[in-house]
Amino acid sequence: MKKCFSIVSSVLLLTLVSCGEKASSRKKLSMQNLFQTEKGIYEANLEPLNSHLAGEANGKAVIKLRGDEMIVEVQVNGAESQIVHPQYLHLSDQCPTLSSDTNKDGIIDDLEGRMNYGSALIPFDSDLATQVEEKSIFPKADFSGNYFYRSETSWVKMMTDLLLKDANPSDGMAKLNSALNLKDRVVVIKGISSSIKLPETAQALENEVPHNSMPIACGRLIKVASAEDYNDYSGSKD
Image (tube, rainbow, N blue to C red; front, side, top):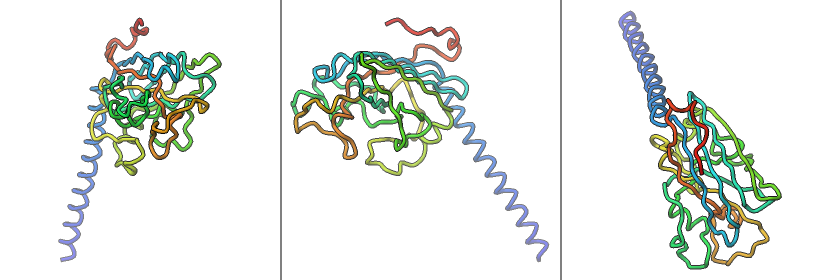
């Protein structure tokens, strides 16, 4: 009887190990498949929002995917000078318009903007691999209101974080349950000076300040180069 039990246990153990290996292989294969649909180069032309508050902030965001490497570059001009500008990849594919000012107070605050660009997905901060913002560092504009941001990370590491269960659904950050779909996302630049007087109707998420989260530029990503054309890319013309 003991011998039979030993044989059965060995079979079960081999089955479990085999299943575990298959599950791990499926996960790796799934991640590879997700990447195959994404790799290439994406650009977003950033157009001004709330220009009467923030000036004509504009620029370009570029995302490059090759191998396991993800590179994000953001050039912003004409933003509020000498302040930090939070910047995010958001879930939706639409930037706000004048009609987004639903309370008619003359500005498009972040809560109104989210009706178009959706929840934030990736903070373009000092660590692209995680959504955690406790120690995040966003770029600061120079005296002319310009800045250039560049960061890179492992695409697999970033996607592993994005596919985790959403531990805090109310924090304004979203998780994924499928591919990243960069071509269906927008980049939003935020932040105005705290000295600017805002109406009491200006709103933000509970954990944010309206000035810090005020959208000042937005652009939709489009795919401008495939993986095969990656090496030939030199930037599109404005």
